[in-house]
Length: 328
Image (cartoon, rainbow, N blue to C red; front, side, top):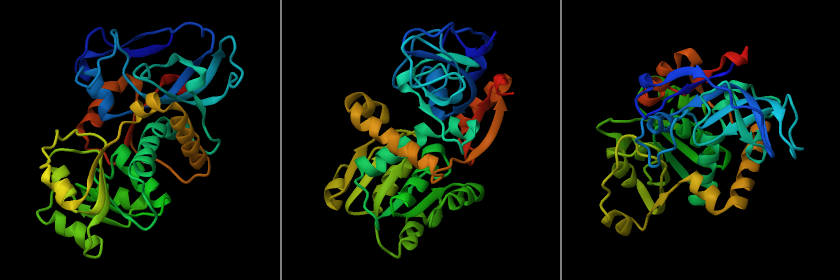
């Protein structure tokens, strides 16, 4: 029988267990997918601990993105067949060897992309593309400063920014992470936490302020980065694992700059047609090999707690992948 990482109450990774889990046969409009790999993110762990902005129903299987192979289709499903390789997403239910999904919410994986890469692709790249192209109105020739540039969304923002014609300055805390950001296409790197960090950013942009900040970090970094914005600058708030910033409201006024929230899930709910077009755009670019996420660690499903702790700790230069036994 398939297995899943499961708990009857929210808690740390060690409070979850690998249990037998059979999702059953697909119903109308559904498919059953044999999952091969799942991405593990900070938000996945925060949700599993019951500390995210929403609490899913219990018992709970963590995970929000995965890739696998269709093994059964329900009545009315015509766009997918057994054997198709697909991206899977959801608000939980992905740290499992098999599960049921609405066929309409799945996308086929490009031939050139392997399943482990596919497992960490859609969420990060759709978020980065939505943030830069839709929310920031990014224009070719502008300068983008990416915080947490070796993290999942940060690394995606580096590659999306380059695709959109931006000059990309990547900020990361370690030499390894800065090297990963450069390999992803960044034009310059700066050291997160350096005493002269703002001067480093300014120097990397030829002494000029930046146009866009991509901020999946929060905490003290937010105000420092906002101060590097120029006229009509846009500061994109993606997340705040380092804490919720206290940004003085005189700064947006004095700089004629904007603080812009980015929430892909809300966009998909409020403007589904736009979200679907965004998904098609990003998947087409993936098929052309333009985007490619960086993977730092791979863990077997039996080692799920280590994978979750690695993602939550934020020390990896790239994504963490959970591999299922069904991946064989």
